Length: 190
Image (cartoon, rainbow, N blue to C red; front, side, top):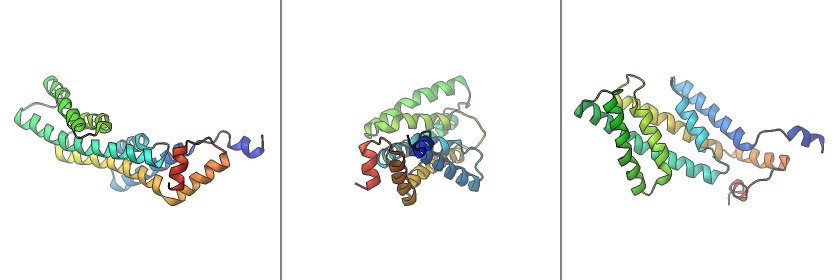
């Protein structure tokens, strides 16, 4: 084993490096936005980053679709539950109502032929609807959706950015990594 192979044997893979870069971008953007709860963007970045650009894009589209649909749905649910039904967030009946209203959300996404968006839509719905603060429903919803979309955008940027793609190619060649064919095709732009 050569000296280079000994040194590089324990280096992380590109998915790890790209995820860290996406998290860095999320942190910088959220710092500029003065966002107190930037964990949403980070979670999105970690979940969306996949082994190739095509699978990352697919994951990102599913996450963005689920986030947007769920954000709109959660906003209207919260208005309906608190203003029309007069439920108090945090009460047992409110929690039961949240649980029941997940069903139409999942059904809607399945009918829209977006089953890959169902899980994230439910997560976003719960994050928005289960009370943790006193923000008005619209501002809270917009903040949560924006945070998630920042994470998605950072991952797509990292996957797309030409210097990072070139570095990925060199990294794979240098490390003599076993790489799935889909990743090689993505890097070559095929």
